[in-house]
Length: 459
Image 1 (cartoon, rainbow, N blue to C red):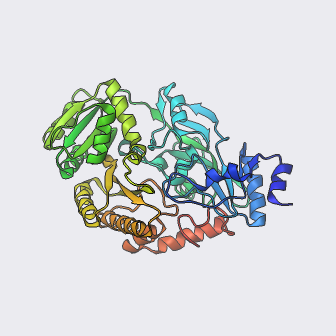
Image 2: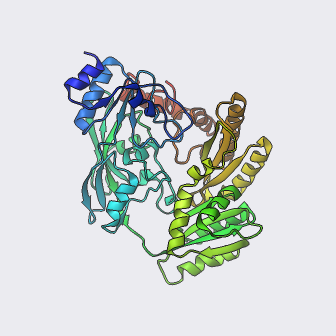
Image 3: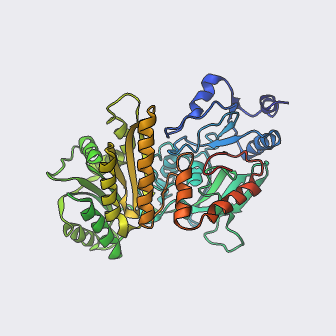
């Protein structure tokens, strides 16, 4: 019995017409996959188990897909593969404010989850820019970060337990409802950031916190990136912690200014958007004093309406940058590196020198509060010459992060795009054995290499 007959007999919904499966060859990255055999739409973990059992027997590749927001190609379909769309697994199963957890299915979108939690006075902190579309399962699989990362950390800090279907169809559970445990190997963490190469996450227990409602959002303009970087480092050195701290260069700063109607002071080259929590009487004054001593060209405290507009403009910057394209076939490839806060000023200076060296149109923005820098490279993906130039830039951009004790991937994962950069990082850190260990784990959990093969690394 072939796969489609099997799915029909098992009464599992699927798409197989060309016009229905074509959208799954792309995600938010610049990569293009190949037509899958089918896109399956399971309603529960038992159906996922039945699908994987059949695919394991028949050696059929399987790609799990949430909102399709990957920027490194981790969710695009492969030739002869089955795509498992998780979007029907979209229920919030259980909430306990006293125990500080929420139990949700993997297809729940991040914004929908936080809309539900907001009504109860709670928050699930991970806040990727794609939160309108991205799902719980997808963000766990890439260990997504986001705007609140400087205060709350990335997704891995907020996962209590997972429900997972393994390559051969077995269902396992790791962790659970409790906030701490010491019970052997931490299998939960093993699947965080694995990009669907070790198993398919179908639900999760997530840690939640009360919302911090009392904060002030300000915009601070600078002539020099190093002044901004030093300001953030001094804020954190003083024991202060912003809820979020976002930076943009002039290209992105002008976009936010156009959307918000807030003018840019003369001579400004860099914008810092910072959320200051008001947890004590003089919290705000401490932040402001450090900022005033950092040579800003202007400081703008936002009212509630302005604050919301600026927040949405920052989250939508990637989409807005697409409107800045000037040529047919031009695309934006996003570099994503991270360095310690103390290294940010010098890393930004070296990145500026690198942009000048390559002569590319590039916009920089990112989550400066946790040292995360995004380089948005405008390039024609149909030009081999331009693509090689962009790839070489991203390679050297990664080298800057490594020289400054950072990593080549902060929050976007590895996917197709960063496989060579990952090897480069392990070699730089004199620990290429990391790759051998990762491959060994893959071979144990997925001996036939059917789960998202070719992503993260090649076997």
